[in-house]
Length: 193
Image 1 (cartoon, rainbow, N blue to C red):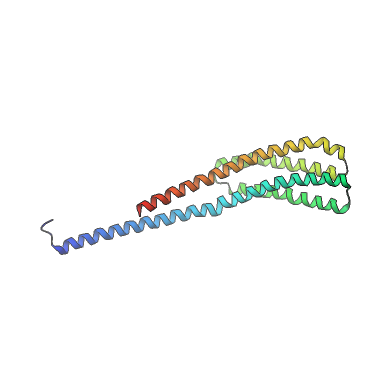
Image 2 (image 1 turned 180 degrees about the vertical axis):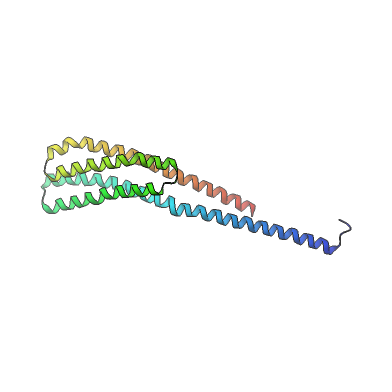
């Protein structure tokens, strides 16, 4: 190396520095692409899935409130106006719980979540049917039969609550796993750049 001229040494140093700049730029580009992909996953999958799961769970509670509203109406006296209000509530809540569960199913990206949705769907249908029985009997002033069906309704509520809890836990776990992966990648890229 002692025989190399200053010009040659500067040329090699410049080439080495250029290679480092290109490598850092390549790592930066890869990091940006990877982190953008991770953010898209959060934006397009995890957040909508969590939102739809939350709304489905709210409709689960809302449908229960509708059934109890129907019972209250039957005790107070059914008229055309309050019958229509309860029926409209039931229609909105029953369609919404199915819609939001279907949306979670469309967004499911891994087999565990797909299986949890598949396990929950029959419980959703059963729960909607049990709520319909309570609403229909209440609005037709069949109080004795309503109270005979309450245990079945409450059981359907609890079964669905368990299925939704499991589904929600799996969605949260998947989101946390992807978050952890993204943070680890970001940390690695920060160290490399």
